Length: 595
Image 1 (cartoon, rainbow, N blue to C red):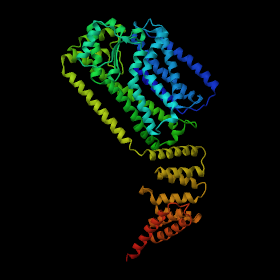
Image 2: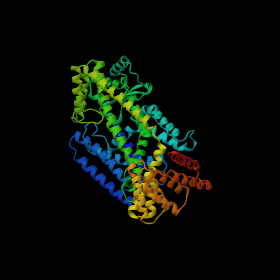
Image 3: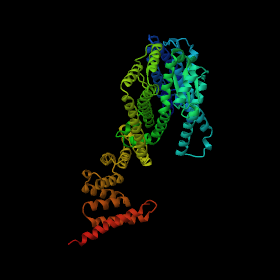
């Protein structure tokens, strides 16, 4: 529940702040459509909830409704283009607006879900308590985000660093706020209070001391009025790390079963799972910064149909900004839902095994699992992307009791995959961060401009459009396409620049199949007859040289150098003409010595 909601919040912020919304409809039209859409959302949500007849149906429906909420939110952003109507475009305020809009869908789902809740432990909660409890679960993550973003928003013009260092400084502050504030905020937001002195507390404390599991405190977890059947450990720093146990779980389990659940949570501590979750978050952020952006620029620079990249803003499919936003959304889902989900499931299995390792038996944990499943509505086979099902967990524990070698094998498996994950992530970051991003950015801009002129040429063909297409195609290394566009430009009007450029490609092309020295010479002669410039004379010299006439190549290179010397401001690369003259004239002298 908590992980899923957090992923949806990240997706909502990325979509709302990154999508290139443009105000096409008027504000009254958007408001009318939004109200209509709101009514449809409530109606569909009620319809789906009324069709739930068991706790499993209810849990699955609630998960589906969260996806539905994100899709509905996406309509607000993509079709109604609500971000374009905001009176401000500051990143923090925009992100906050997106969160509020998305949260209102979650609040509707939670409020209506309270009316149809099928899990007996939560069925009697009032809608307001139900909504507040769900929201409080997210507060330990939202508050650090809000505080750090607010701080940077206020101090934006007074930061001691800028550029990439400002981004890294922000990221470091945010991670630090999560590490320091999240656990203390959680125990306050979740209405936790220290577990009273009792035989159970002494039993748990003795076990923690024996296992050398360092904790700040043991708390009763009072979220949802303490009715949740759950326990957990939160916090990376030992003094700010807390063991949480709900009153509902304590009421349902015997002391030995509670101790087994505590052993499971200690397994998370001993296997450093909280630290690894922080590593996953940090590395994801670094991958997005150092890997995603270079890959995105590569995509823009080498996309074979750049005309499709500009269609949304001018009546077509998608803008480059939209592609970037969609790429980020897909990256979040793949990384957290699937990659992190794989590790979370195996971390849970490691924690289960720690109960078996430290207590010598998993009997208490298995009994606890069965009771939780029964009290939750027979949810033994309910799948979860971040947990194995209860039945799978029980079966593995029973198998490990019979064959203890499975324990070491599983720990080895997790260690191997963590090592591979770290090595692959660091290799990606180090490898792709070395890509020449400035050059890629320039090529991406050229490719996007090429796409714009492709669109324009399909609607308003003209000599100028085809000429620009030829220039851009040549800059992009598409010499064959450049020749095609130059030929189409010549159909409108003879242009010495176009003739010269065609001659240059035909005589210097990297693709030897495109080279045609004779035609290049003819085109270069036409260009110089129309307009005599150093550039055209240089092309003519190159054409004569390609036609095995170094003497004439030398002659025209001398003329090109002289012409460039007369206008140094127009020909700043004067050294180039000197080198060309030396090259051709040396070749001419060498050929004259041959008997």
